[in-house]
Image (tube, rainbow, N blue to C red; front, side, top):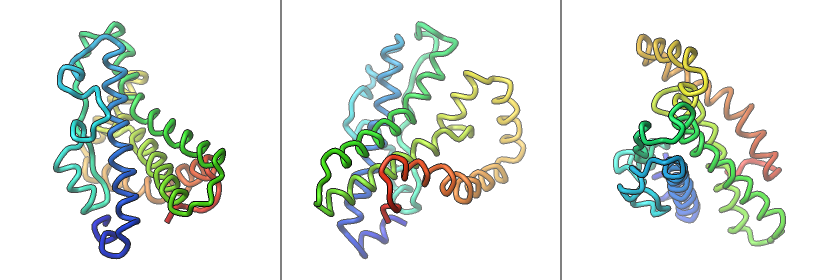
Length: 206
């Protein structure tokens, strides 16, 4: 729980909170940017075409984030009928969010390697920022509604998406528990950690 870190290590809490808020804001902004580029201006008209966190943070999602350690931002609205490419557009919009997280992680990793700073606080912050973006990007690719992965799957593999949706509707609790366990015991150790190491090298930032 993040709020416990506030009392144990306020600086670490500030680093983690700042990294999460920035990562979520860019993630949601990327959805809005791609939707606008593809012809739908719904998000722009609703003030979502900005990196201002106030436009993207969901009050309940933010509260859960700091209490339970997971949360969510406001979904970016778009009208698929306004898109120039209605077949692939929704999938591209969904893909924009995780892609932005991976790009931020890679950019921060390259920055650390090129700058070669000896400032411990600087290294710690960017390490946390990279880790959070890797985690957020990978997690959102999970093919479970309402995560981006479900929309990507619906666009590019609609039949498989319908089967997964059917299983989710029948066994939602079991699917959610299974997804959580899969994330903890498979995705994090075998996907997120190696990806983090590839970008920055060394141990995890905590």
